[in-house]
Every structure is written in C-alpha cells, then in structure tokens.
Length: 340
Image (cartoon, rainbow, N blue to C red; front, side, top):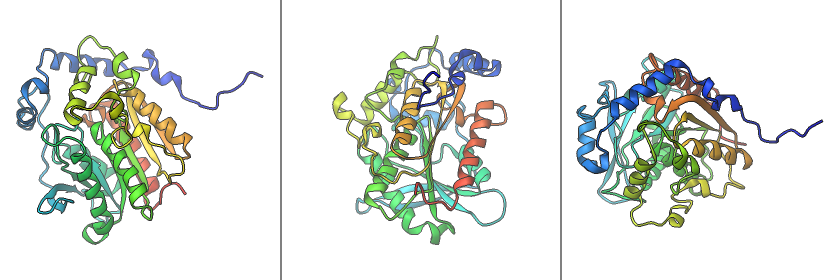
C-alpha cells in the first residue's frame, strides 16, 4: 500500500477548471475597471482615502448605514481616543456575542465605517454585535501605532463588552491588512491576557508575512486584479518605513514567524481565493496553526480575487458562499472558549 500524506488538501479547488464562468467574467470586469488607474501611492494616501469615500475612484464608494452607532474607547496615549463603530443584527432578540473587526486597506486606507455592508451581514448571519475599530493608518502613523490601537480596543472590550453591549467579546477578525492585525491582536492577548480566551478568529485573505511569501511574486494576471506585488510593496513600505526584509520578519510584524508552540490557540477560519497574491499566506498560516495544535479551517474559493468577501453576496457567488461559511463558523462557536 502506498504511503498516505499526513497533510491533506483538496487540490481540485486550485485547478483552473474549478473556476466558474461567472467568476471569470467578474475578474475580467474588475481588471478592465481598474486598468490604467493611478495607484494610491501616486495620488497620496490622504487624498486617495477621500476619493474612495466619495466615489472618485474606479470602485464604488462605500455604503454608510444609518443603523450603525459610533463611540470611542481610550488608547494607551493620554488624551487620545480610538474611534469605533458598532452594527447589531436587524432582528430583535439578545445579541449572543461581540465580534471585534479590523478593516482592510493595506494599513493605509479605509476606516472603521467603510465596510458597513459586510459587517451588517455578519451581524445578521451570526446574531453578533460587530465592533469595527478605527486604528491609526500609515504612512502618517507607521507600525506599531496601528497594532497598538487594536490591542487597546481589544483590552477595552474584554472589560466592557458585557456591560455595554449585553454580550461577551468572543470573536476577532478582519480582511487583508485587517486579517493581519486581527492575528497580531490575538497573539498579543494570548500572551498579555492569558486568562481571557477567544471563541474564534475569522481571517479573510490576510497578509501574515510582510517579507512576502512566494505567491506575492508569482501571481500574474493580464492587468492588476485588485492586489499585486507592486501594490503590496507600497503598502508595506508605508506601514514599516525603513525596515529591512529581515526586520519585517519579526513576529511582532509578521505573525507567520511567531512561535505558536505551547499557546492556547483559538479556532481560526482562514479564507482566500486562488486569484489572490496572498494565497500562500492563508494556506501556510492555516497549516502552521494546525501543526501547533490549533483548529485551523482553510476554505479556498476557486478563482476568487483578493477582497471577494467584500463584494455583494446577492450577485457574487464567492461572497455569498464565504458569508455563509463565516456565519456557520461563528454560530457553532458562540459560547466556546478557544482550544481547550
């Protein structure tokens, strides 16, 4: 009998024939939509943020929901607060958990109010209150300022979520740069708040190695498909100015290099599409999570580009499937206490 691999992965999810025609058409439309557009670094981060908010880029402007409520939490720096935004389920009834969310945007773009639609969907499918954190952005505030805001907000939620929102802080997640910051925050809590235990992490197409795993270089499309190597280089240079490749491999910057052995890792859901230059990050981080004794669930979406979960689930199949998987993951783990 031939030997069987101790590591199993569904290779069919990575094959070109697994990509649906609707996904191919969406990718082509995205490439054509952004073809020839100036990069955010050519325009300037501050100006580009305002352009995104007002719909002056190729992508639609964010939807800002009236149902969202704003508040702030104190930071470690005296006299400065961290802006936050909360979205609750549309249905009546008691919220079952608090989910802390960290937005995407390459550590330099977007804000706590630019992903309302996704966060409302998460709140609805899992009956959770989603708290989005307005962490400080590069290049005005390079590392470690942004992560520190995430750490401070998480510590505040540990102490106040139950009294303020009627449920415990149980989940932590984000997309892209937000997935990276969510993992950094989870590791911070494991070390600094060992009596606290998360019920789960939701890490959508995160960047876990800021020195770049091979797929960042190897992923090629006829035109930029949401994210590519050049864009990643500019994002990382803004977030970590002046740091060498070796310095960026410090676990406080790149959680892929964290020694996970002996840590009480919470269950973690990793999602990524095969047309994403950060595909290696999710595959390798999920593998390392399992190797270290954690429950690491990896879900691969054939042909989906970077950011797919942010697209309208009513019209984009990968977004619909991803939201359903996230909802199931969260509902199944409400009330849990991580990896026992």
